[in-house]
Image (tube, rainbow, N blue to C red):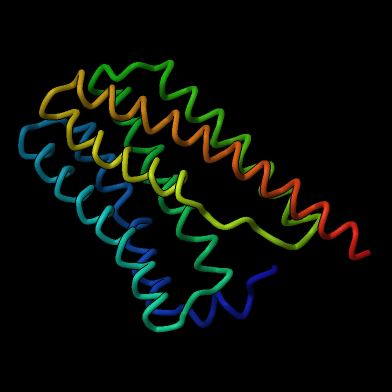
Length: 185
């Protein structure tokens, strides 16, 4: 395992990131349960997840705890929260299935590309402004969905588009990294 030592020595920032992994099943459960109280709880949990997403980066930078593990866990936690929230919206709240499947296929492709990059070059490409903007868009869209579903769908749709732009910029970064590594060898 590439990150063995880091898995044992989790930083405070990585612990903050881990909050999103714990919140995900609770968010899903409350959304699928579907009561007004459940929706309120889910929206509060989504707010906490979004807060932890901003907080973990700030903690890592301020405490000089930026790590490869953190760079891996943070976007993974975001993707898990987003995917399971979208799934709950599809299952219980008539969210457009095509939009969920489009995002899911993009994430699956991005995950495979990242695993290949890690396996072949032992490196990962860090999240960038496009990816972070997409994540913010998803969280805003989730909140808006329960106020005005059409607005939530519109914001989430824009976040999906941003996530595709992020995927493209990761592809460009991969090409640049591959060229650099091949000229070094």
